[in-house]
Length: 386
Image (cartoon, rainbow, N blue to C red; front, side, top):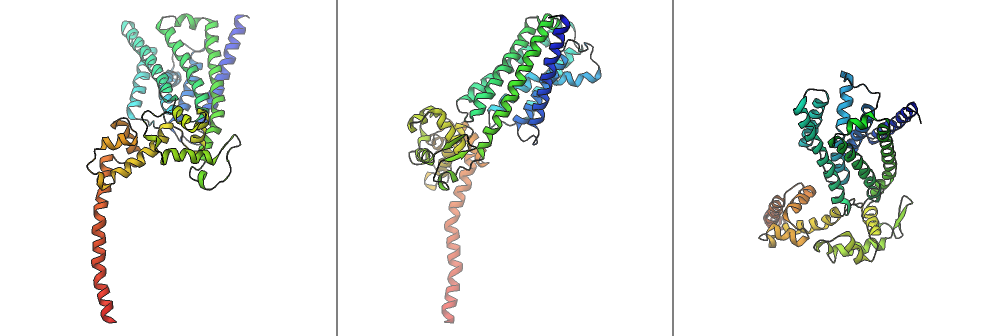
């Protein structure tokens, strides 16, 4: 194929990738930026589209004022990718101001280097430091995926988002490594190298679009009411026509949790719980996710653990029992995760919850006594009239 044909194919791949990525960004924000994952997913898609534009062979090498925003968005890809991985695979993630600080620092420094504010040795040092930072962010994103893989209960998210994450991670690492080895200018100057990047972007955009449309129906299953699953139906529970959840399985799982208190077991995993129920692991994931509405196995266990802890903290006979002992008895391995999970559920620390609960218990006898004393004269007065 001639050079003109390769350039045309390159532009075609980039145009397709840009169109798909803009569509993904629009779909992520279609119903409003409801979640951090949706917002960051839209920004990541825009960063990919901007990169497809600025890395094109025909894009002007001299930066005009109108090109700076496009360049800034394209440079935000690695840090946005890290934040997106945190938000997409950690249901407890919340955006913090220091996340924005990291984003602004890394993008701002890279922007200054590209625009020529720094030159010579200082520019080289900053550029290499940013390259290592981006590699570290890519590694953190991969670590987040692996850390939450086993407890993720959403089948669509497990199958498809992991594919998008690995593909994007490989693309970022390849691109950063090429810069680290000082071969980026050669790749940029090569039509074949540019076409390879354009084709890779187009492929990733296709995978992301496919994943977006496949994950959305899976998340809709979470609308199933957990309580009515056991009380309002005698037959199997339908979930969008894709699967059925038998009430007997839900009842067996509920018995394991409430009667046998299996959640207390040390290092309980979804695999070991599936063995206790005599079910394949994927089937138990389906029951907990679609039948009870939980997206995360740890959140499912913590529901029972925190309920037990609240009962113990509000029990006057256990007022001298250390909070750590209560947390360990309920199944938590250490005090830190217990405190975080407890405050996320109640809005209070365990100490605050115990103090308020015990104060209420102490006030009950006083209220009963006051009601009796107030009611006694009224009875005497009634008896006198008679």
